[in-house]
Image 1 (cartoon, helix red, strand yellow):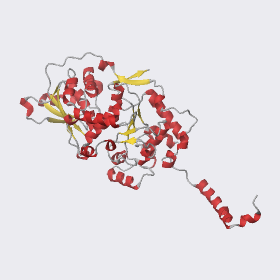
Image 2 (cartoon, helix red, strand yellow; image 1 turned 30 degrees about the vertical axis):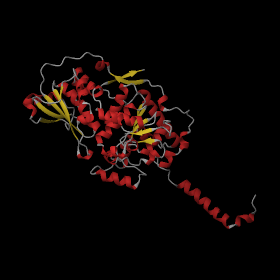
Image 3 (cartoon, rainbow, N blue to C red; image 1 turned 180 degrees about the vertical axis):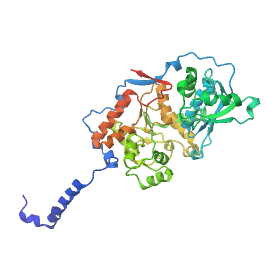
Image 4 (tube, rainbow, N blue to C red; image 1 turned 45 degrees about the vertical axis):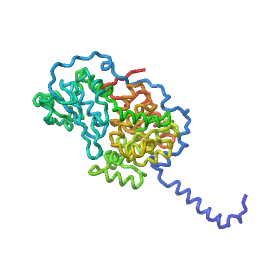
Length: 447
């Protein structure tokens, strides 16, 4: 026991004042927000009472497989006479254009039209000049769709020099009916171009038109030989086994989401603000409800937290299937350190010369061949990759739930409780096969 005199030492007097002040600060200070990097990264929150069980080891109850009405049914004979020629004009990035092409093939069969090889119209934003043949194997495409829909490389001489009559379907509101809205123009002009509508009356598609869409989209689009070779080289360079992660947190995407984030760096905030334009972020209750609906992209730091909650080891080999300009990437790579990218694996000159569509095609190729695939956003690429993996019986596929994460954090969960809630939500999704294939061509199978 120290003597009474010892408390009169100068250091003792400082401590006597400092300790109560420190306790007051700890008690009165606000709690750290759920998005705090320190809270999300701290490894102690992952040592829960639940036995360690990687998400892939959970027994599935439901899987998505190609519907038998598409794969096993006999082909309907194509009509002897065509109603005309359709060219599908595809816009945007590679996977958006691929989605439009798939729809266009179904439309051509629906309208008894002959499909002309599609035109890839890429906006200036994508800095892209690739055409259909620059990405896909044209001869394979035509061969695989034979009997489902007629496709030609070139138009007949009598209309070869004409520009197609443009029928704009892309921005029509409501459910768009192609028989009513496009067939009259096709019969009148004989050669038309379309961009498929976002909202369509597929319920009116006869089975043969649906089968044409499914066959063309999932069995006929193969990368051309040059890209297949480059993709194979890239796949060979990645240490095995590996997980392909499609991580989305680019400035334009965050700006478009109209979400705001705490704890981002000044440079990230500046990049997001520059991309916002007229799309101002939600505020107050509207912002909270928007986030709870799962509308806000996961940050790289949040993605790392969720992967840890799913017991994905932090030394897992990860291929980052992502575009250029991912913000706050350090928040992920500081936790998962064994990360590989196209730029780290490919020759620097080859990578610098690649267009956006080429990069997207390589990400797609790697993702359909990886042992496991995880997406932070269920966009066009994720839908296509998930479907192709289901087609091949590769079921280590998962889309992270922004809604479940936001719902859990809005309830005040953090640390171990948040990790447990995230695990339970994703376990349920994985067991029930939710959100991992396109229902138009794939059917839910109970195991």
